[in-house]
Length: 392
Image (cartoon, rainbow, N blue to C red; front, top):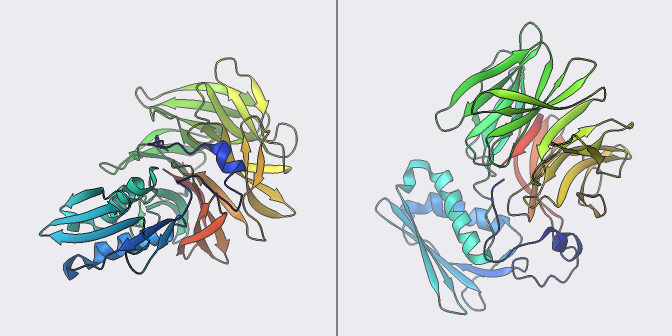
């Protein structure tokens, strides 16, 4: 997750207490009334349709049939190999032009980039369409690592390993993915994929179970847990010199080490006092503080870039629901309801949305959750059960 504040900041505190009300006065939360002019050049129909589909996905845009009463008008056209989008503020008369050269080289990625620029110009907050999803999924009997965008149009298998590949984590700059590979004999290896050149290289391997964790906010290091069957050890791995530093060890089972975006503090899930809960670790003095309070079974924390709040999975009455709480455990909001089991929530960098997934039989449905309205937006479906979702 990268820096997401622009002209107007969306504060998590506001989300948790003001955004759940029926009346939302924050200009970034109210529905913007949009009119999109028809495309005049059919040659650009594919990118035009994808941009329109993206924008209509999100609940803070209301689309009109004509210009009357609109807040913004969007017009799009192509000139040779350049695609243009013009966003006009109907109240002030100001307009902004975005150009994409060689847009045909990668229609969907370019459409996502332009969708983000349009969204950011209208709302003043970071777009989400260029988000990259990475996860583990069964492929002919072996779990491999996959990468896609929010729409699933660019779904790509990244690994061809003989052993199961799990626990992928993507860096905030979207350059690296670290993951765990099970070895044919015993033990596991930590590997890293460079998405710029698609190099997949070994970092190290051991007879222990080494589960990849999240990247630090500067992407120079990542966290992982090593478990030998008796003791869990939390490490920070430094990419510059391929060294690692032990931060904490315990006879409790530890998983999901992630940055909290508070300097010197990380979080992980551990069953130190019974059921798994979220703990905050001070890296300097190794002081451990229990953060989550309820339910009794908690996992998969994901923090906002400000580090004041996080979303997590909590099991209640046999159902995995999503909850939001503050770092000190004081605030508490239930984000999802009903009988669906949500997994691996990721709080996206613009702070308004959480991406997660649910299993439906032998398939998996990706879901974008709008925090202010708690609306579930279905993204796309894959015909297999996935796990270990990460996003940036």
